[in-house]
Image (tube, rainbow, N blue to C red; front, top):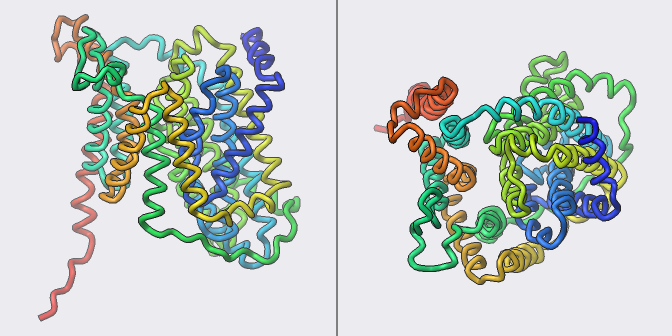
Length: 502
């Protein structure tokens, strides 16, 4: 184990790898600081830039984007009350009131420090917990992997903000797209319509660029989003005082624990973790009335929680092959392109690479914290870039990246089709998360179900019930889908019926 650790560290301590990491963090900060551009979009759009470098260098850049964008999303949330990423929603609740009363610098400093703390603690959890989880997952057979994939998709559909049916339909669409190509058992072409380009299935990267890049561009153009020009006139001090740190410590500790736990759960993300942590910190605080009005405790809880989901989601993604949030889902696609299969076998056969990932994330977290402390003011100016410049840049990068995947115009058309479909689904209030998870987990679900049926001689009942773990996961998946549906009529019954005027 120690030899693997040192080999992983030596693989990271190369100037090219560290250079790609630094570039990734800077790009992530820019994507996070621009309202409307998220960590998911940054990783998806810039993944093609890593095709021509080694896996360590490419992964260093992508992890830098991931770890840099989440804390940077708090910069516009604090300065102009517009979250840069979904994970920064709760950051605006107390960060912007602090900025309005002339303490924007303090809010930015707390955001940088607490974000770095949350990421580092959760990365330590990744280093400690991922190996035991992976060792346990090595005992899984085809039936267990099938049930795990079903459970992952069901969670994404079940936490789709009250849109359970729409989440299930989006997940089914993702599974349908994943079936295009050769049959995993018989290698018979399916749904290719005679086109050789679809024999290997729909390329993952163009779909991700379309869903998270072009969809956002189309949505902003459709809604005529305009950036707020207001900016606090006074930045003030950035470093919090010792008394303020002591006051924030309980809330930050709660935020780290809640965020890491939420991150481990498939389909949950920083937005869910930050809201839960903010609410719990308010309940435990002696100064409940200050929350939402510029409370440094509320700001600390939201910042640590939204960033500590990073390590938690990477733990699930690396150990089980199931992404904890949307950026981790895109990272799975990037790893597969570089010939790396996330899952328990990665921890058995490539331990040094796992430690390289841990060290890369640690260095990225520290670098993002430094940039947040010393470069918050320059980064804040990026917010003022004209929207059309950003839209054109994203479309150009998407086209070049999709074409570079296999030098095929088909991938470019796939990207535009995914963007239009994602835009239509977004307008119809369909969550995109289940679609992505269905696309990622579809091959894993189908191939393992087919193998399990072959081993059990096509006995469906025996396949699904012979393994207690598989049966438990399937029951949990069913519960995660059914329970939200049962709760909806109760919520509607509690709402007052509308009055009818005579």
